[in-house]
Amino acid sequence: MSAELWTIILVALSFLLYLYIGWRSRVKDSSGFYVAGQDVPQIANGAATAADWMSAASFISMAGLISTLGYDGSIYLMGWTGGYVLLALLLAPYLRKFGKYTVPDFVGDRYYSNAARLVAVVAALFVSFTYVAGQMRGVGIVFSRFLQVDISTGVIIGMVVVAFFSVLGGMKGITWTQVAQYGVLIVAYLIPAAAIAYLLTGNPIPQLAFTFSDIVGKLNQIQLDLGFKEYSQPFANRSMLDVLFTTLALMVGTAGLPHVIVRFYTVPNVRAARYSAGWALLFIALLYTSAPALATFARYNLINTLHNQPITEVRQLDWANKWEKTKLLTFDDKNNDGRIELTPDKTTSEITIDPDIIVLSTPEVAKLAPWVIGLVAAGGLAAALSTASGLLLVISSSVAHDIYYRIINPNASETQRVFVGRIMVGLAVVLAGYFGINPPGFVAQVVAFAFGLAAASFFPAIVLGIFDKRTNREGAIAGIVVGLLFTLFYIVGVKFYGMQPWLFGISPEGIGTVGMMINFIVTLVVSRLTPPPPIAVQEMVEDLRSPAGAELPVESVH
View 1: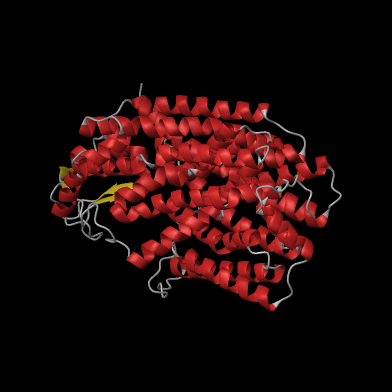
View 2: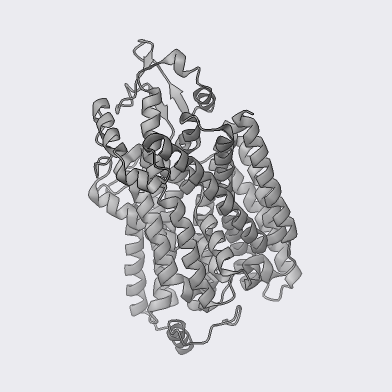
């Protein structure tokens, strides 16, 4: 069977599984819709958290970026992984103890202000819509290659599937679907990584093959021969300061991502939240420790397969021909010598490769079995849809719970709250689809923006909300607004209006760190210049940090 037929079969089977789980997990009450009834087992929540957190950017783009940028691409690996550890150890148990449905709920109650809640909702919507655009773009790329449809059609197919299990089951449906999606994506990532490691080094364990073989040395030499800098040379594409700031932005941005934080509300208690964070870290590590190996193997194979080959022979390669139709891989014999060459200069390079296709094309380049190619496609879709569904619920709950129920209609019935939540999921799917069809960058870039916005808005408000009882509502609101606006201005100015990076050359991907610093300073200064929080709030913050303190039940704090 062809790779396309295997892809259709495996994607169809995985989609049927997701739809079945969504139907079996349908809910009627708001607790089930927003926090899965808080009865998700630790291991299942760990797998769901890993799938929620490992998006299309992790599965599709991260290895592609490392493969393209070499050592400098490891900022995504370090930032995202470090951010998860920061979230699991520093924030998750305290947020779970607080007992709220959403991050804006925490901000609104901790800072005793609907204005703060509203600002947090706006920040959540900014972050979530920016992030979900990358996921839907990833869905479109997978479909465009393996089903030979245009990216827009692929996005629409993904929208229909994710809307079904999100609308019916809310967080409960999303949680159990994400458990299944984790299984699909991790198998789809590890099998080709192990196969390629064995083919190139004789060792089937990617991490060991990468560490103890001479593959990096060979790739370094190939890069030098072609005029590139060594693959393992640090700071070849970014300055040291920019690498530091981008890594920090990704790290604290991860810790502030609302769709990951809300996962810790779905377990029965704080102890379960801690254990599920540990399980998630283990599940995440399986993919993240394999990514550098897969990236290196992929670049080595691609260069050896394409560089200095006759263009007529390259275009006879089935995978090259089909990727070229998507316009994500292009060949242009600029010097008319009949061969194509890869060079570091874009004006002379005759091969252009979109980083988003590196992981997806690797099994075909390595000539692995067609079913492996189909499995990778199913894994990429699982990664994108799992994160997209979590983000859609954040968007829905931000409006339906934090605005409609907590501000507009506090007397709303369970039926009304769930109905509004489902309507918002539907609207969010439509908007997410639009951004997926018209994204402002490739997947990992778009996701990096979301992390920067999360770093500049949520992270200081959450950290100070837990560890500084003197922080008040005036300080929190001012900090979020200033941090968010500064970061947004810088990113939009540089990326869309040609503004040069003027702050020590820090890139838009790293500017979230500066936004976070500004947020911290503004929050602390304004808080000290205005009245302290009420005594009851200060006592609540002290109790929140005490392991011996009683856990707050959901909805007990007003």
